[in-house]
Image (cartoon, rainbow, N blue to C red; front, side):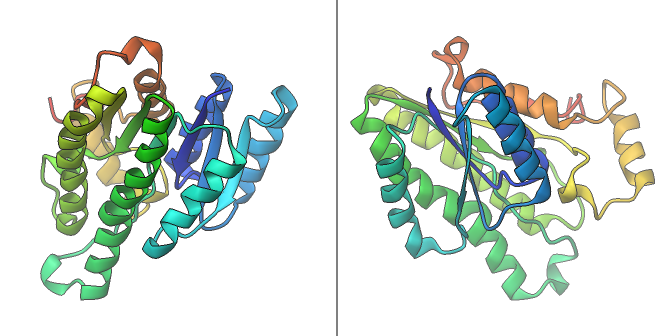
Length: 244
């Protein structure tokens, strides 16, 4: 059973990805600050299907200095790390001119710095075992604009640049690095948008609907699988044609 780390997997998009991967035969190892009722239910469900296919490891990714120790413990507990899905992220909406400096800094720390440092240490483990896959969850905000999300968009744009350059660094050693850029998905991350705003976004999309969590999870599964063995440095957009 191949081990895949999924950050921010206790709810929403991350939980959807972890559930999909566990159902596809991977061992999903969820990293999050604390468990949720949804996560506990998903673990119980996965255990009934296959023992050990869904695990939870508590860790606050804002603790940058603790990340090397986290990876050491993961390597001890699990035999090899095949995949890493950098999904954890936070968003504070509002005008950049009025946003507190602490909120800007926290978005950069959690959305950009933490996945970079975590990837650094996980990739070392992948190289030692002969290869692996990294999937960074970016956003269409990384290459298009949306009022009130300037800082968040900057962090997601940085993940795209990180993806492309790291793919060149580690490709020759058997590690594929890609990104998935979801559009607006109905999760906790879009709670700040009204129903009318989401419906307007859907109407403007080519397919006239919003992408679902399962659509994004399916894209991640594909990039982790054998069918994507020749794909690296790519950004797969899942937005129902919002940016078409």
